[in-house]
Amino acid sequence: MINNQTKTNGFILSSVSLGLNTFACVISCIVFFIIIYQLYYNHVKREDKITVVLCGHIYIVVLIYSSTLMSTNIRSMLGDLYNQSFDSSWCIFSGYLVLVLLGMLYKMFVNQAFYRLIRIAYSQNRRFQSVKLYIILPIIEIIILTCILPCVLIPLNGVTYLPNDYFCYATFTNIPGILSAAAIVYIGPFCCILFIYIHITKFIHQQGTIQTLIVKQRQSRDLLITRRILIIVSLLLILGIPAMTLVFIFIITGEENSLLARIAFFPVSASQTGLSVVLLFSIPQLKNIVLNLRTANTVTPVNRAVQMRTIIGTH
Image (cartoon, rainbow, N blue to C red):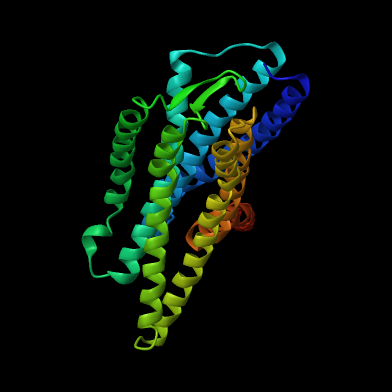
């Protein structure tokens, strides 16, 4: 059993995380429905559709992931207040679901990086520049990830109920389990993203001296966007460092922090909030459709007023 001070600290961590996840959930929901609205009414340029679809995938994953983390935060807070246990089969399932969603979030960035690689370095390859491909790709990925994670983690007893935190997740003190989960959902996708963007950057620099002015301008914009996305992904990597640090401290000293899981989830919740806002201003196509929606809402009343005056004038 943990003492009252530790319970209070845990309750504060869960409360702040709940606020951050709620904010990320609301922002992601709004942006996602704006994207659906603009795509449905064909307000997105043809050449920008894949980029906007990929952003939509990121926001829907952030939305679901933040909602799942909110459920985890609420269970922790109820457990702190009433010492209520949530140990059940559904709890174990939710633990795997959180890992799957985290892996899908990174895979959405892999898909985004892959599309930029094709568009910049292999622009003549039209097979990989189809909107349908990037709509179907996440479905295939989530099926594969859903099959792989349990097959790897169940034999290792990777996801268990954490009695001090009142939710189920990968046990940080189960070193084989947590390292396997990290490799699948975190390290592997991040290495793919890093490799692709390094290749894109090298390609742009190599082609810089032999391209026309228009192509150079487009490549400069692509390079700027690439740097912004790399900053976002790097922040996601950095925000995972506290948890890994505590895991290595446990390996060295053998002492487990009773709030290890909540400390690990706190920067993740902060990253969801930052990601939902920063991505909006980092991708020009996404920023433009949001600004265009606001412009349409402000221009429409003016147009109606002009129409009314015209009608009155004719009578």
